[in-house]
Length: 449
Image (cartoon, rainbow, N blue to C red; front, top):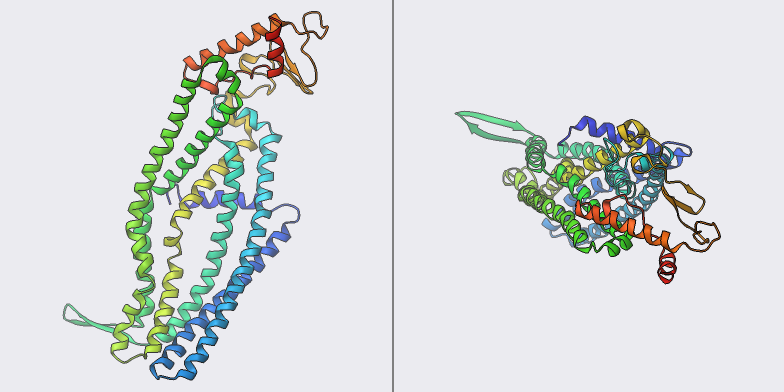
């Protein structure tokens, strides 16, 4: 994977400690153990199904209808058991997912709010700002826990399954493959056992080589999508300023620019996935068929029966499918690497926000230029005076509670001028100008002019 395996594992381990640790961690670990046990039961059923292939197809070869019908019943019983194990494991895994996601999300929010990182690491205010923290907390926490459970459970279960399948394949592939090479007779005993990992190793190398561009594309996709969503939210939150200053055209240019980044990266991602799919799609379609082809020399040499051929093919398919986990999950792995990088970056920056913010460290209650913007109760104060108070009327110079219409008009003109300057600079609603007065206050001000 691009970016290195060791750094990715280190990031994943740090995040896993946050998700699975803490008070009451034993509940999550107990659930994890139960899900793993159900997966092992599914492996046992798979081994039984491999043996079923021989019994069923041998009965067909002998035209033994009674035995064939009995094996049909065995098949349905094994299928029902396998489905029950899978459904129970899936149910418990989803419960574990929301448990660990809640822990990880809570920890991320504690750091983001507790250290005032939400203020110190704003884009444009520090040396190393955190982009789209909302997306990292809401989306990346979910994706991380989903992929963590999926990958770790699969890897452990597949390791046990691989040992079981190789033992079965070793017991079945007792014949050798012989062929001449440069005048010498080459004999490969139990060639089906050695062919399986070689076949998958070559396929894995090709998959990794063709799929290397995917990780940065997935990283940029999440960033550009979040930037576009954030720009839309900014337009909604500052709709009054945009309307007062006639900034619709500038806002449209800003939104078009954000969406153009989404489209450009999407096209790059399409090309990268197409290149990878040119190999992985044919591999997916043939991985269950090639075992029978590889076993044909033994069948034509009368070393195995038809049932033995099907059993051998099933065992070989199980080995190659298990070893092909990396190939089948490559896209998700690339996404997981990007998620770990983003989420670990947020946690690290939020843990030491002042160090990360660099020159931006200061009083969080101060705005641009060090001017203080205090928030006391429900009253919001501009550096030059009060803006509005919830449930109160803005007071005039005499403090009588009657509105000072001239002050309102001046402040509104001040905000409009600030936003027009921001639009002229191409900043649009990204400018940190304060929101305008409430609509009710503006109507009162307009009525008094």
